[in-house]
Image 1: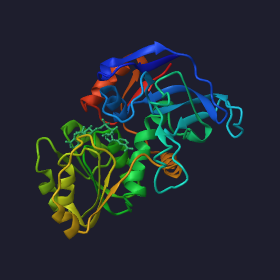
Image 2: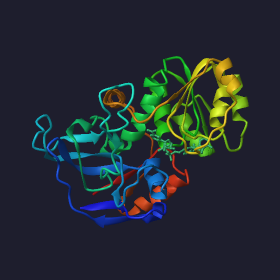
Image 3: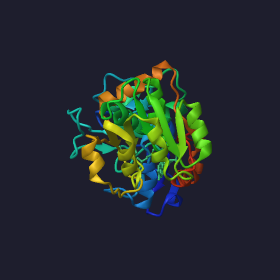
Image 4: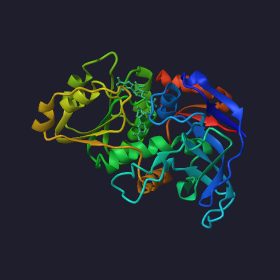
Length: 333
Ligand SMILES: NC(=O)c1ccc[n+]([C@@H]2O[C@H](COP(=O)([O-])OP(=O)(O)OC[C@H]3O[C@@H](n4cnc5c(N)ncnc54)[C@H](OP(=O)(O)O)[C@@H]3O)[C@@H](O)[C@H]2O)c1
């Protein structure tokens, strides 16, 4: 089968399409014929060596949708031909509050990923594709949708009528945060480096949209938009300090990533305002099912582009440059 492989570090240009053997499903796994996959920042970080525990060579890709091609010997509750979307969180464990840090992993390195014609995954990780979604739309959802849902709802506790701040809305996870926030009846304030992305965010329902590049003191501008109940962020750097400046007394900040790994904050606003900062990563099987159910009511992911496997290295470079708005989907024909 054809697969997108990484043999050595060196950024997106190191990705190669090559032929590898079709995997055999273990007794508790299903073999999925992938029709569409999608990029996450994680894939790009792995090509750069900016990820823990890199094992090479690797087939990358955490997001995928397709149909079941074969069943492992113990799988009785799935059928060949089922149209499915894959939950990339492997081995979350029994505690919905936190993953099993010793046993869990994410599909797509070291477990061979979805940028391939076939992938073998635990049967428990495949869910019926929501009927209203195309295969490309379904493939765009898993990792980013799961992370956004848990950050916003399970850990962030967002309620209808509240206001959420979503910095860097062009990112894959943050576009889902915006879409989910609006679906849940919240007011959404977004920032981005790019006015065209801000315009797209307004079309998706953003109530306030500011350019953090041309307005570096956007947090001061936002004081007029108080109260801000929740901030969800992965951009790191100075965003956390700015979030603490604008979040309301008693508000919450949910952090799921560190695109800029270092952050320095003043402690005074944290304790004086009784702010809760929570960390969050991926999500439990319950989070995944609840997140996917939101798409039964006509929601759509924001898709930046749909490319072929041969164009995947260039697509990864587009992600590295943060040129995208939403998800880059890869068709695997
Ligand atoms: N812990 C987890 O489970 C988990 C899951 C998913 C992602 N993550 C992490 O979360 C981050 C985002 O992932 P992704 O896949 O959504 O990435 P992505 O699609 O590449 O999005 C990154 C976005 O970050 C924004 N950004 C960059 N610099 C910024 C700044 N100075 N201020 C505000 N925003 C800034 C940009 O938004 P604009 O284009 O709008 O400027 C950019 O589009 C990554 O660090 C990733 O590793 C963690």
